[in-house]
Length: 405
Ligand code: HEM
Image (tube, rainbow, N blue to C red; front, top):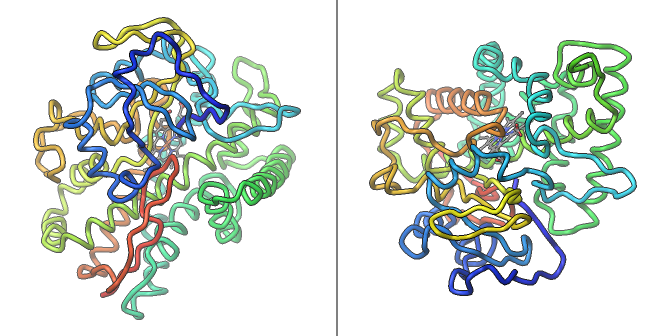
């Protein structure tokens, strides 16, 4: 969920040259060698607001302070989400990724359609199903003494729950997993374009089928929505369903991979988690704080000044949410994983009107996975010689994670 401007980029005159820093978030060897350490270090190596140039994103103001990200996220009238996602669209068939690429007040009409499904009460009914799916997956590999966590648990679990929620058939699990990988992790633009076409064809057909035969899934809900008595257009319906695919799969996968890598490396903390079953919500929140996986990109709508730095209408701006979660002013000793921290709002799911619609679902998926996995596989470690590799992209997490027990 980061921004992109692939055309050659000229730095505008109002950007002070001393604020242009060679920081490469989401790309670059130093970042990819240890992304979280890199983002935590930004607080020591950079001023709080700076400008960076990236081959992927062009020139972008960059925020790393919790308070500054809050300010940006809570002022959509000054910072717009138009063109917030990096995915190319066919100019002949333009559509917005909704609700993210809409601004208030229009934005609210989209959120109202599905917010009840994603509310804490709405997702609570899925708890038993998540636990069952987690156990079904564990059954397949527990006797083998090891697994490739991402392929065998981290990807299929959220995809399965997503399909359930959307009202799409479980037989699509493997296909959706493949599509998510090919769309979001391929270095080959032809593969990405081809995958986008497959997803588009499938989702359009699914939408048409739900229009003919409604059910209580999210696709049907969106397909039949008529806010203020006006049905959504075909492009709005498609842009909404498509964005859920993009927003809801890779993020949970990357989070699970990050958390399981940390668990594999910290056996004594696994014991601590097991010994504190009543504190699981706080434990999940702290694990999400130190493993935030994505960023918030905006376009400046009105000239604005942050910490004395002047930004102009049309500038791009990006909040490095994982870095904001390491802001020592808000979270002292920020890289320490401390389940007893005083509760402060974390930014893993952003804040403000565009705060993650799937946040309660994601929290529940992490919590149930943690509980079920540790109950059945309390001891595990990284497989000998396992390499932890991060790829460039808008969602941060190790590509694969080989575990043994
Ligand atoms: C751990 C998993 C997840 C993380 C870390 C995450 C993170 C985020 C973040 C940071 C944003 C704000 C983006 C911005 O400000 O530009 C966002 C928005 C959004 N997320 Fe998530 N997300 C996760 C899971 C999900 C799931 C499971 C779904 C749905 C199935 C979902 C649906 C959405 C939607 C629809 C938005 C746009 C909200 C709006 O514009 O009003 N996310 N997410």
